[in-house]
Length: 302
Ligand code: DC
Image 1 (cartoon, rainbow, N blue to C red):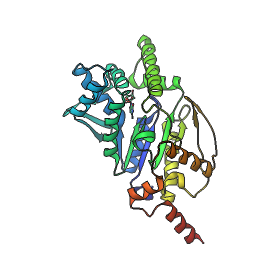
Image 2: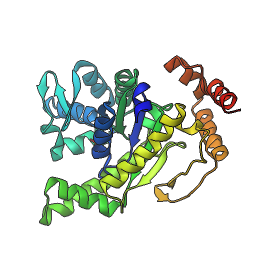
Image 3: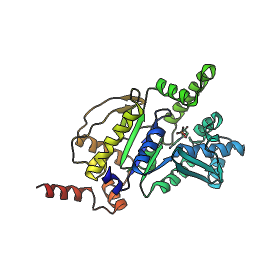
Image 4: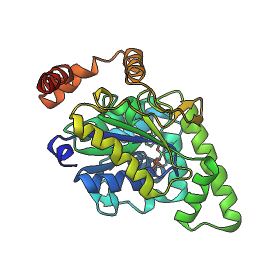
């Protein structure tokens, strides 16, 4: 991991609730000495303010105004992000059921998302971050060095959530139904729906332990370190995609060729009309750029 620490990367971890994003993001960040930023906590903090100020979750304009007025701070700690709202620690309160439901509703509005995305881009622009959420690889950092989409079977995700929150009995059924509804809302909203970026590596954690997921994430990271190029440009062994999304269904596909992955990356860039990633990369890191580095590496090997 030494080479990784020499260059400050942006790592995007997206996926639905209960897939294990927070745990992996915080463990990965701790290992790398990076900052773990939990973007969902920002939507939760805004939702809490909307509850306190009695602003309707369906009214986009007042919610955007509220977002502009409040001060939301994420302070990474060993046990996760401390979330500050107008100077008050709301880390525990924002996990409550009413705020969870409200966050899902306020996050559908494009004007709210636009504000959040700008703040998140600003927070991560210098690299050295593991940012988790729903749209980090697709919208917040489309040129992230590594994008992981962490998914799991819905039933397993529900069970994990229940265990995490120690929920049992009758309440469990309604909490599970709420989670399914939030999932549906996240995946079907018009603005930045929850979807894996075309160039994300999908890890399905249904039958994997936390340690196994972390090991896979580290494996991907060491490719970045080896090449010191964005993961997708690695001249090393052909890349292996662990899964691919079709609609909302994850399916496993293995051993995409480097060319295939590059093609997908180019399509994903063209679809969002972005500047070529290589140029963006060179600008961000003062790096001569992947092409030049590849050439230099080939020359050195010759
Ligand atoms: O990850 P979380 O459960 O704390 O997120 C709370 C809500 O915020 C969730 O309903 C989806 C939304 N969210 C989002 O729309 N985009 C993000 N990048 C992060 C969270």
